[in-house]
Image (cartoon, rainbow, N blue to C red; front, side, top):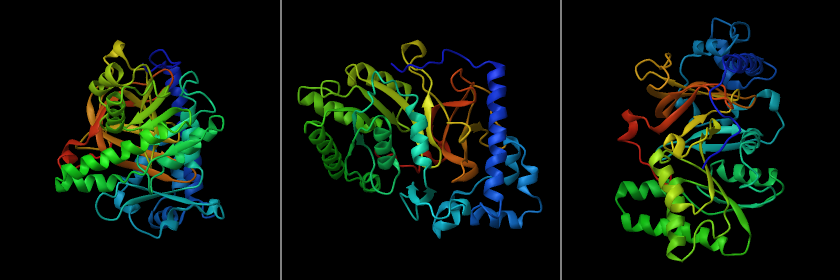
Length: 371
C-alpha cells in the first residue's frame, strides 16, 4: 500500500505559503527566459512581437494566462537550439522526444532538469522498500525518451546503484496494434519480458524497478508461470506510471501481482517531470491522486469548453500543464489527458488530479501501447 508522511488536507496557511512560493518562482523564471542575456531564442522572439513586457507585467502564476495556450506543434521540428536559453550556453544539452507515434515527434531540451526531477521524486521513495545503493530494472520504453537516463540517474543518486534496462520501441508496438498484427504484438511483448526475466535471473541483486502497468502485469504473469513472483525474484519497490493505472488495476496489482512488493503510482511525462501520488489503498478504494512537483511544474484541471477556467473540486476537466524551470518554460499546455480536480494535500499543498485517462475527444484516435 502507498504510504506518505502527509496525513490529510492542507491548511489554508500551507496553501497560501505554497502559492506565494509559486508566484515568486514564476517571476524568477519569466525574468530568466525573457532577459536578452539569458533567454532562449524562441521566447525572445515571442517577446519581440508582444506589445507588453513579460518581465514587468508577469507578477505571479495567474498572469501567465496572458500568453494564451501553448501550441504543441511549436515543439515539433527544429532547430531545437531555439529552446536553449542563452544563460546555459556551453552546457551539454540533451534532447528528449515525447509522443511521435505519427509525424514529427515533439522534442524537449534539457541539461540537468531530468536529474533534478528524479532527485526530487527520490525524496518520496521509502528506503525500506527502495534501499539506497540497490540495483534497478528499467522495464519501459528506450530510445529517444528520457526515462532510461532518468531512472539510471535515480539509481545512482540513491547511493550508487546500477540500472539495467531493456530494448523497447513503443512506436513499433503502436504500429502493430494499428495493423491488427496480434501475433506479432504478442511476440514482441514476449521478447521484452524475456529480456526482463533474463536480467532478473542473472544474479545482479536487483531490488527496485520502474515499469508500466501493462508490462508489470505481463512480467508478474510470466514469473507466476515459472513458479515464482516479483517479490521472490528480489524486487521490493516499484514505481509505475501510465494511463492504464486505474483504481481497479491498482487494487488488482496489490491483490494478485505484487506478492508483498511495494508499489507507488506516478504521473509524468517529458514536459512535466514526475507527479507523486497521495496515499492510496483500501482506505480510499485505491483511488490515485497525483500532485505535480510545484513550483517546477503546475497541473490544473480546466473546463473542456474554456481552458482558462479551472473546474470545481471533484469535477472533471482537461489537464493543463505549465512547466517552469530555467531550462524550459511552457505555459498553458493542454495535455491529452483528463481527470478530476483534487484538493490540496498536506504533503503537497496545491491542487492535484485523479482518475487520469485519455481526453475523451481524442480517446478514439489515441492508441495506448505499452503505457
